[in-house]
Image (tube, rainbow, N blue to C red; front, side, top):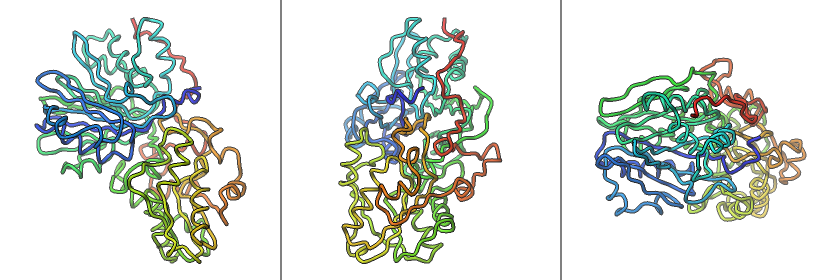
Length: 470
């Protein structure tokens, strides 16, 4: 299964703009607002005097781009990307957008998600002569487009999209058009906005606020949007299937000031905290949240229980998220560097520590130990998600069950491993009700595969007839 090939899994942020004279500069600000979605590489491609011009590099957005670089990226259309990689998937060649040049025109691709049949498609493409320059599954789409025999470029894109499976939000830039596509289940968030006469697209709506753009609407699952000098038009490359937006967007990934499919992230997380308080109250003196994604949850928990919320943990703002570091050793070191307990707040107190998830257990164990070292008399851990028991094949770095502590141990055993006085997870029913996306409504469903093992798509090795490749 694809889980064995960790290098293809990624969670990223994408941004695009069409029709603004400062496209590269605005893309820079948009990517900066999406930096939490990926911290290992960034890139921008612009349409400059009828050609595609690229700059990308390893590191944060502010490290890859400086004023001279941005001034050289002249053009009124651009796409950008921030990424993180799992083990084996790093390197400059995998930094996006990927740029492909040919005599018939150039293509730049930016992708958030994971193609579950990428390995099989690569094998078939290589058997027919394709040579891949990266280990990214994003490159598969470019080869499918170029090998399509459809009469127009738009139809070639549609045909290529029909062959890929899994989770994908694609931005595709040519010299004349910007294409936007979301997979038929809508695993990833993707929104359209306006900035004057310009069109903007981003993984999260917080990017619109940063540049002063106005939110227009969500990109629909299975939709292909084409933006050009003639405006924006919408078509379909696949029928819309039951919505399966990633639950971790609401729990962990998205910024609190973003709206994902019409739901504000901060409000959703507060509701998660309130529901968690109802399901798993605790006798304690203070409630504290693990920065940043759990702060809103902790506030909701405190409001519902009447236990005071306190800033018991401080985050070092110059250290990245431990969950998206590329190796376990870096994750463990990152926990020690990124968080500090506030001794004057937690000493002598019974503490409810609210967090968004327990994946491998490393972070939780270390935080509980730090709180005890700072003088906490009790540490009660409350998690605003169900136990993660199954790997994700759609773009999150949990690719084998062996990595997941909840797949091997009971809640009581996990409590002992992390050293907490008590431990409770939110129920699946509580998760759906708190966020406000009941799964019995086709357009409001969430992907719960990492909690249930019920995957919305077939994640086995692909078995597809490959008639499009000539």
